[in-house]
Length: 463
Ligand SMILES: Cc1cc2nc3c(=O)[nH]c(=O)nc-3n(C[C@H](O)[C@H](O)[C@H](O)COP(=O)(O)O)c2cc1C
Image 1 (cartoon, rainbow, N blue to C red):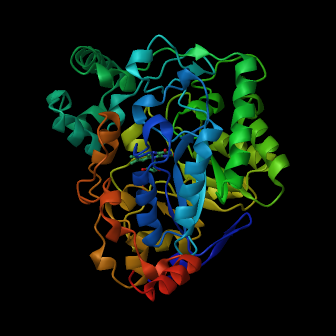
Image 2: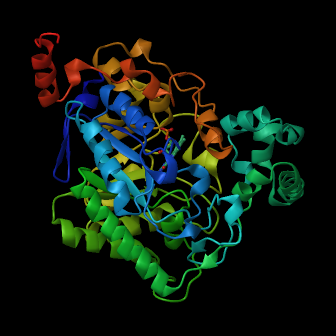
Image 3: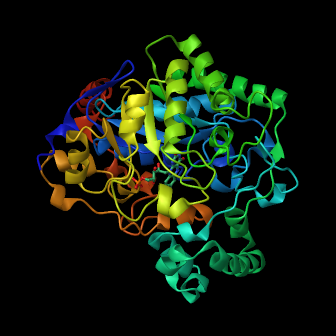
């Protein structure tokens, strides 16, 4: 299949993208102390910008000033004070210095009941719409996660017959397995237990929700001034904003719970207020799960209803994923590829044709076919962009055979939760980009002003 369609330009809001290949938001934990973008953060993105991604969507930056944001274990980028602005602005400039690369920042008020909390702060319960704890359904573990769990020396899943047997278990059969696994984790791997069974969160007050809205709006508006081309609200995967949207995690009876409009309110308020401040054209969108794929969770139909509300509130693009941390493997990080485009057409229709970005690809041909079939407007690479930062450039140069394929081994994800420095099983340079300048230095792609300065410098006599 001809892959030329990947390199057709596309407009998102007022941003002209040079191609239809985005890098998915990925929290790699390379952030420096106190949540500042680090040299490694910049080198990580610079390498992908050099690799030809038309759009880089940053890792989720947390815009929540309170200690209960529950984010410390993942070492996320923070957008929580003016002190962070210079580094954030440098990050955007670094990406822009590669010809035509654009960058959207993904912003989140935090993790909510999916707290992955810093263990020393256990006494500070995370704020969430309702006091309903998360519980992962282990029947959703995929082959990649199973490999990683085995790497940690845990053979329990295998003892129960492995992934395929688990998947087929009835609720009754699963109940017994669950008790044994929970007991094991509580005793032997307490640092993992909270991922499988979260702490019970604290119901946020209306005043606190309003403060979070204010904070998100201020940080988002600041991000445009810092040089980001767009802002993407982090509303998927069971994180705090998703918890408001989903009837599975939101049991409130005030104006933030109940009807679809009420559950959407925190997001529509944020969107409306940002849009009012930035004007009609700037890129402002949402990432959301096309279906939560959990009993009592958001269905695809209700997600489409939310997309309509978000479009009316000012969102002009959507980034589609699926699932939550209650079904992390089978849903939002599948073993295969092209699992998410099944939701994109519904979301495009509900948003009256606004551009849709869909992740989950490995092969250029599959990605090009999804675009050619009209199933999505942009494709994005997550784990494949960790494995090979030069995927776009290789495809464009007709060197697809040289692409280093993501093994879907989930080491990146598991390192995030261990928590260890995130590495890739097939790309030994991932996570160490700052030590390999040759990965991101490229005079041919250099900002024209920098290039002309370097050219002039070359003629200087030695003194
Ligand atoms: C290490 C890691 C961190 C991630 N962090 C985020 C994040 O910060 N925000 C987000 O919306 N999705 C996050 N994701 C999900 C990816 O953006 C993507 O949707 C998912 O990996 C599926 O796409 P893929 O098959 O192309 O990898 C993360 C994925 C990985 C592997």
